[in-house]
Length: 110
Image: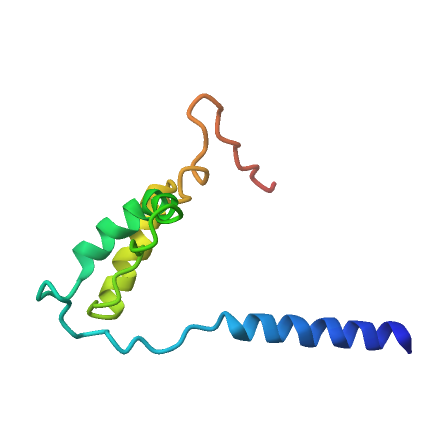
């Protein structure tokens, strides 16, 4: 009885913590910034690529953000995530067989 109560409390606590991380609506999406522009795919791609460096710098400068809130929505988000993937290698390099090892041969059923 006591262990199931502990598990229930831990699950509820985890759900509350995760609910606090849920994103809210971006009220600035589609509106022009103070410079008069709305960020699109290409700016999202660039900002995603430089995001790890900007994150480290933002730890020391309080007025620096790593995400442009004045964006056009899904295309900016796609570019941002694609830029992050490019920075971290994309994840596809480990899928290919190494060139110096022979490929395994298929055995034919007789």
